[in-house]
Length: 146
Image (cartoon, rainbow, N blue to C red; front, top):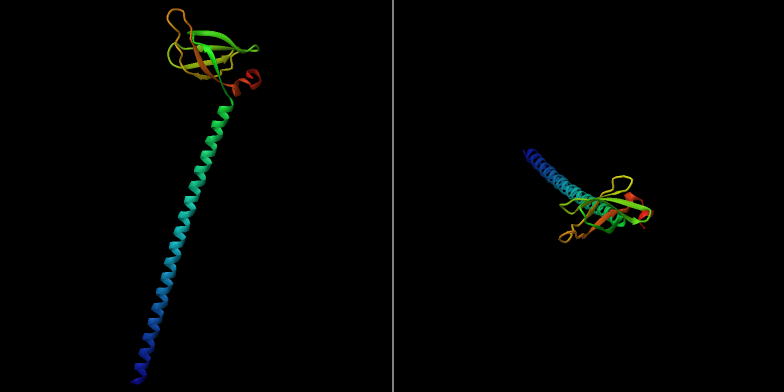
């Protein structure tokens, strides 16, 4: 009888120890999963930050490149088509629309150069105003415009 009581006691002790051990394992596992989750979040955040930074840099580069290659020239805002020279060897054909600020500027030999400008209305009668035209010198060829 005493032996069975001892046996049961030992069994219960073993069960308790096993349960404790299992709980510890479970807790460690949960902790590990939490840490992995946190690590994953951190990595995702870093990736997002990196991508944002990269995008900003690319945008800045594009803006800088655009600025480098843009020059503003004042051209008569007469409606229709007229030829004017930026330098003696680079005549341009300016197609100026009656409405709106957009001026399409092409080298005299064609080539489809696009330029943006603000509207500048001429005075009454035959008055001709000047409109600013932004010419992208990168398209035209740098040496012609300097």
